[in-house]
Image (cartoon, rainbow, N blue to C red; front, top):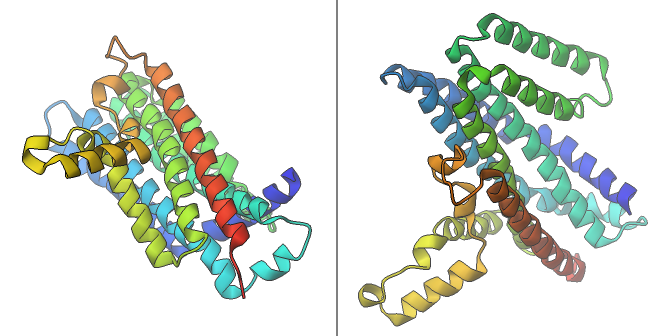
Length: 310
């Protein structure tokens, strides 16, 4: 089973990283990180903080967009091109196919977040002025290594980007020790963003199992906005909106995953909230992600298994 799921996952990853929309969103994310330098130049002694805040916010926004787009189109593309039929005629169960698709999209999102986060960390490392020459040299060297790997790995060139992007993120994290507080904000935000898209992608997989890409994107975005507004919905004033709306808001806040967990306030990211240990908070957030992902993947597998392709 593991071999079949991993084969589908790697094939999904290979197709996703070749999508033009992914390159466009990655370029937009990197441009946003670069534009943060312009805004930072207008501040007084808060340059690194502005880069960290804008970089973390844009990383979350674009990662969610990628998860919605890939989750909405991955299954439908296979059905539209009819490439799913020869795949399912082999010794592959439908739930294995769904799980493989899901993990392939997550691998793509990991690359996206790692590259975007590494770009933000690189800017902050240069801003701190501690390892400017080393940061530029290592960054240039890493890009040269990627170019060589892409040139030499003829048949597996798309797969080398996955370990390379994670290595780039870790290297830039080490070189960004001159801005330790802001580095922590970016690193923790990246971990939480990855946990958030684990849920968002699973939501998209549920709808894509029976719906079109357009409706899947609409429904997923709608649930995402409800999740981000869960705290507000749970505290709707009854005197203003009435009992029915308040009850509806409470029910939605309890049923839909609370995605506010993945965009906490800056003091919590810095570990300055004494009553909430930072890494314990991150661990609980990831447990929440795994729980909802398992539940939603099970639902999407059941729906996809009962779907008639005739």
